[in-house]
Image (cartoon, rainbow, N blue to C red; front, side):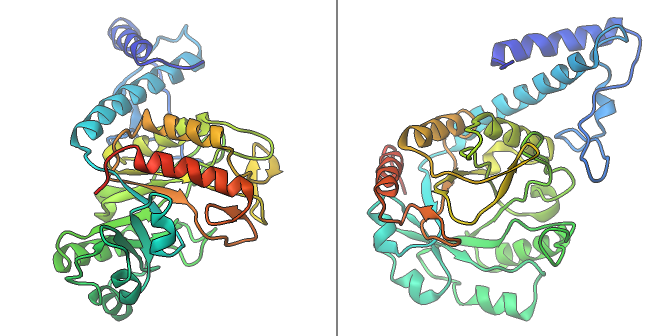
Amino acid sequence: MKFTIANAYRLATACLVTRIVSEPVAAAQIIEPRTGVALTSSGLPLKSLGPCFDGSRIVGMRKLCVSALLIILIDGQSALSAEEGGKTLHYTSGGSGAAIAAAGFNLADVQSVEQLNALPPGMKGLIWLDESGGVTPRFIAKVKRFIGNPKLFGFRLCDEPDITGKYHSPAVSPAALKAEADWIKANVPGAVTFVTLMDMGSFEAPSFMNTFNPANTGIDFFGLDPYPVRGKAFDLDFIDRTVKAAVAAGIPLNRVVPVFQAFGGGNWKTYTGAAMDVYRLPTPDQANQIFARWATYSPAPVFDFAYAWGSQNGDTKLGSTSPEALSLRAVFKAHNTAQPSQ
């Protein structure tokens, strides 16, 4: 079943009315699979929302009630994002400034002052720090080099920090990332901070609960990277599930950076359901569908992210010279140049 916004409002209204006339029952819960903590997007225990239906209704209807409330929240945040949004920057990882500029990108992945200074006119740099251990002497030394540079946009602190340490070692604490974000804010005025998030759930049920959000890290923007084009599926609803999970975990839509799939093949492995799967390079039509689905949630993000330009694991990406990659690159260029950019 797909919700429309109007249907979501009607269902939520029914939930509130039924709450008044029904006997109390256990509220529907969204359980983070590793901790068992049930929270709403406001950070309050979900039971504080009260019951949606009385005991004669099925559990599935309670879940629909919660979904409707999330959709209303997402819809409201989309409007806020569109009002506040202006010119979107377009970022990709890897590739020289000149090469990515030819595909319409205007935010580059850089690591050195020399790379930043060499960017074409009008292009900004997002600095890859790869730092998640707090404000160490190494962190300070890396950041200080870029203070005052007019081409600086901000800092990408790290990629998919793992709060558990189970998947990426060592474990990363929100306090360490907050110390980094606060130091940058105090010492590099105007620079933004950014991380991509690790999905701690699954393809069917993404989760970011009890990990990282603006409140516990002070970070400005969070990349969400649901890659829907796989060997066994092309599932645009994976984007929907991921966005709803992020909102439920306390990440407002105007802090979300859409991460578009721009790779396929190679040695990357993933799970689709219980089955081991691979990624496929999106076709031009699939890429346009990905853009359109993301636009329903984030019509005017501060920047978006095409992952990726350069090959990292034997895969085909935007910077490849295969006919498939060149066709995909043309679609990204059309997307990147369809709206004014900074």
